[in-house]
Length: 141
Image (cartoon, rainbow, N blue to C red; front, side, top):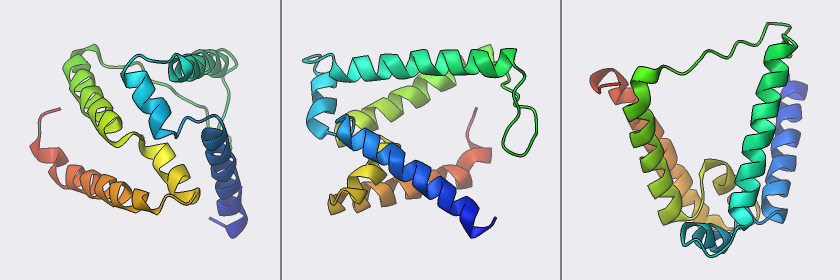
């Protein structure tokens, strides 16, 4: 990849991080409000993201859209025999999100906004991802 291609992704990521910070999606207090059912703020944002995702996937499928390299975009259906895997994985992800007060994307936005303590959860997330990569063939899926 050329530097200009990386620059494009850096700018998109920076813009997305800016939106996350300004919408308070990365706010620990907003996330705790959500998990305590004290505010609809986060549920509104997540609900809107789900609606945008559904519409986007339908447009991609119906228009037979292609990716940036010209390859057709293929979205395979979920395997219904993997429901337990999705529930367990989602629950672990949700528990980590509730305990930390941030999910993976906002961790970087928080670090970029000056909250240097986020280095620790980022390193822990990387270690967990690496560990999963090592153990993936040994655990049931």
